[in-house]
Image (cartoon, rainbow, N blue to C red; front, top):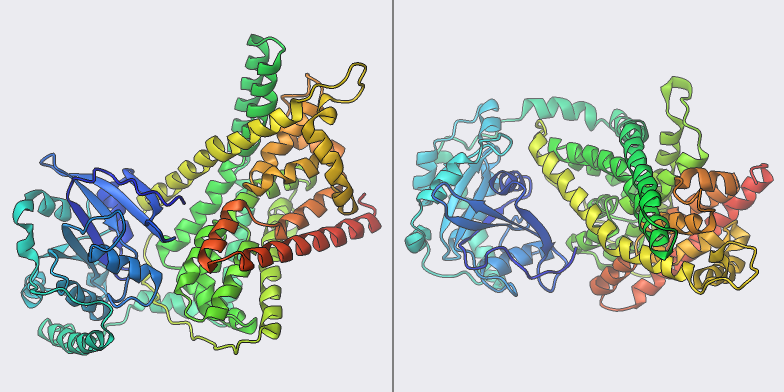
Amino acid sequence: MSESKVHFYSNEPMVALLGNPNCGKTALFNLLTGSRQKVANYAGVTVERKEGRLTLANGKTIRILDLPGAYSLYPRSLDERVTCNVLLGRAEGEKRPNLILCILSATNLRRNLRLVLAAKRLNLPCVVVLNMLDIAQRQGLQIDTAALSKELGLPVITSIGIESHGADDIKEYLAQLDWRNVHSLSGATHQDEIEDVASHIEHVETDNVRVQRILQNLHLDQIIPDRLSDRLDAVLLHPLLGPLILAALLFFIFQAVFSWAELPMDLIKSAIEYLGDQLITVLPNNWLRSLLINGVLAGLGGVLIFLPQILILFFFILLLEESGYLPRAAFLLDRLMGAVGLSGRSFIPLLSSFACAIPGIMATRSISNSRDRMVTILIAPMMTCSARLPVYALLISAFIPSKRMAGGIELQGLVLFLLYVAGIAGAMGVAWILKRFTSEQLRMNVLMMELPSYHLPRLGNIGIGLWQRVVIFLRRVGGIILVMTIALWVLSSFPLPPEGATGAPIQYSIAGMLGQALSYLFSPIGFNWQISIALVPGMAAREVVVSSLATVYALSSSSADAAEALVPLISSSWSLATALSLMAWFVFAPQCLSTIATVKRETGGWRIPIIMLSYLFALAYIASFITYHVALYLGWG
């Protein structure tokens, strides 16, 4: 994400959403703002910010800011530091909020109320939103909102974040609010000093006593178990059944990535071919037609065709996150993380890296042990990010037959699953080696995290998440991928071949000469000069490798073949050994430039990025060399 300082309607009132993780804050944010959201980073730090716009019934427009989840306003992580800085007006390029909506989970008031009491001391207008009231009622909790409001000295509104009209009371309250006198909702007389440790400890002790008294007055001091979640956890967190269910679930997801995406991919492919035929019909055979067909259309079309597979993968990730299962997956894998020298806290950053290594690396700021944090940063790029998926899908579609094996298992989905497993196994192997050879004494941290109640996913939230992924993907296609594709077309088209040349024009171009030079380095692992060319712009973004291959092969083909799909072109010109070698390369391939820049920013220098590039390049080359020569020995050359 870029570190943009541009905000929506900066002169309008700003409402900040404050709450513990898993209180339903983001679901309410989606209800309030809908598609009118943007995602960027806070100025100067790599912590994601979500901001949206809400137009009230009276026509007034306000800004909604979704603050990072926090358990305390005495910051222990960068996320909590950013939340405190925004509330105190210390965030660069951001004004202090006009109003805080303090989101509470009605199912866990004991923990949530501490944050409300801390927020009251900030001398900011504050309104309490009691969320997940439907789940609390199913658990037998009856909360008197009027009594709670009296105890806190603050207005209390109810909401249900998973229902389409669950935020209506919030919208109505904000519409009726007198924004000129909103400061009357403060209820505090001084501003707390966040950095004062002694003051913080004193406030915590006082708050604990006060929370207990509030719960007793509301007759909520007895803990009522969530019987449905407990019954599900008895199976899903079972020491033997739990990991097996998780593995089966992941296996099903990778099967679906191929089997479900076939129809939409065919439609995109047909649309691209039709557009190419139309361009051939209406344009004369000149450099412009070559640029549009062999450059832009072949390059961007080669990447766009894999959008359905990316969306299917993210659909399941969002589904598991919405249902409350993902924290359980972290719990199940905690023991595995400990075996290779990492604390369970490393799981969430590594899990984030399956979408993109950049947010995964950013998430390591919650790891207090410096050694664990650096090791997690070093292995996060080995998690198979979504940018690798188009490359894997291209190679699997071209060289792995689409057929069902015993038990109805789809072979292509099985291969994709094994590639993801290979990345995880490689990362765990590197972590185990670093455990043995790092000098700092390892301090194991016990994984402590909240397991939220299970609930049905809200399709609206999943839809917003998928739409945001589409926007991010299309921006990359229309941004860096388009620029790199056009640049590669220029390098592949000039200079023109000499008179009497018999080979394809690209062989005499700058890119062709570069590819021929690089092929001496990569020929031992089975890469031809076309692959060697594609690896260079692929350093900008992984997906560029697919568009680069499409451009190179389009320019290497005759005019009749130029608009053909990439899959039949490479399947007829590469050996299976070369394809397997390239798959092995991308399991460990050196990272894109954005990831390297993020690592430099997070670690404060070039030492860790250089170590990362060096060991990933070495691992990629060794893995490809072994894979290629074993494949040749098996007769797959």
